[in-house]
Length: 168
Image 1 (cartoon, rainbow, N blue to C red):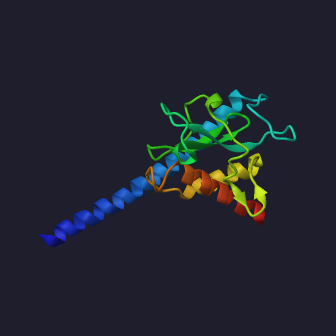
Image 2 (cartoon, rainbow, N blue to C red; image 1 turned 180 degrees about the vertical axis):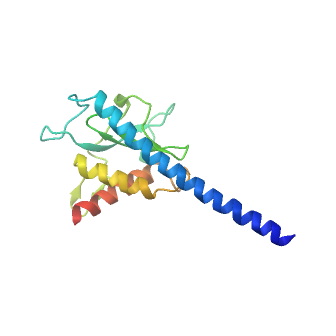
Image 3 (cartoon, rainbow, N blue to C red; image 1 turned 60 degrees about the horizontal axis):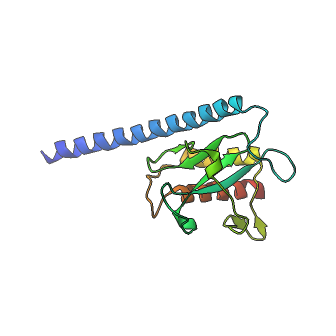
């Protein structure tokens, strides 16, 4: 009897792992489709540009819905590209676009959380940032947790991957 329960447990565990991998692959495909769709819709128009007038990516934040201004750790952090493509990690444990209008997002030059040594990251190269997002998304297997694994952890992981890619 114990052997039967053990075998059932093993089968359920293996199928759960397979389903997580399938969901991860589906999520990666969804990200690619979203990026292509938004790029087609916004071709030639930009929400913002970098200091050199070229398209860039930025890590921006918005206050949580229904809240007054909270300290930085009570905000939603999200990655936006000039063309409107955007990525974030949400309470449904998915990396996806935000359905909130871009105008709700902001960036404060005084909030330079994303730094490495003397380098402060306000504007990110579009191609390198997309590669960083793809790399992190491919291995991101975390369930959302407000305190230990949230949108800020995802944004930090993407930032760290960007730094790694540009340091080589």
